[in-house]
Length: 321
Ligand SMILES: [Zn+2]
Image (cartoon, rainbow, N blue to C red; front, side, top):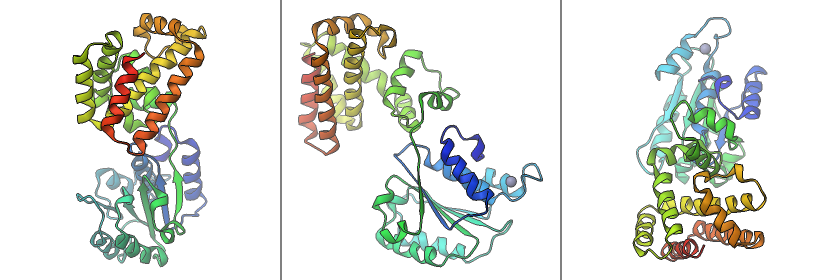
């Protein structure tokens, strides 16, 4: 993938190309953003272009070809199967830094999920950042640039990966999956512009399952079997609590749409009758209050309140609609 072929991230791509074209390549860059935002894709495209020396002149230069095949000797990626990136990984990287490039005048080192680096590993990497050979470029991808040692941060130019627009998300997802329109609307709305979230939602089928359950309970709030099934599902898949919250919020959002006469823009358009009924029963003020309450609940989950209690509150919210 070339930088030009990336979907979205226009301003970032522009900056990266400028760095290369104006020959102002520094020694350390970081790409930060939430998991699934596409940090790795951007970093690899940048790496490929940093290493390419001749594509302008020769179509598909040796560096690009081998990069594509994963055999470019001037590209080095730190790979770990452990839960952390230890000092040994960085030492091995440094042994490679000592050797000059094979093809061009650069070597690129990529540390994916750099937030997994231990303090010792970061301190060790610092030695390379302090006195890098002129050919070495180190790329990091991290969910948390701020969590890295200040000494690393001060020597690294950090780029944030921005969320993708709905149109860009469609461009990314459409070639990969055949999704009914209805579901896609929902997925776009709740993946928050992060492709990894959308892919997770699609591949796990989580949205479909939990959405079905939530709507079943909305229709039959007294059915303890459905309530129990949701409780069990969320207990086993804590990550989906946020999806369940999203579903409920999308319902209130749709009710507000109906109240303001925008019926044709519903996320849950297949549940129009129910939405109309709820919209009639509540004032706009009340719908906004309910949305606020869910936002608060979401924050509580983020700050790790008792999950059990949180799930119970969420179920009550559904049963009381
Ligand atoms: Zn090339």
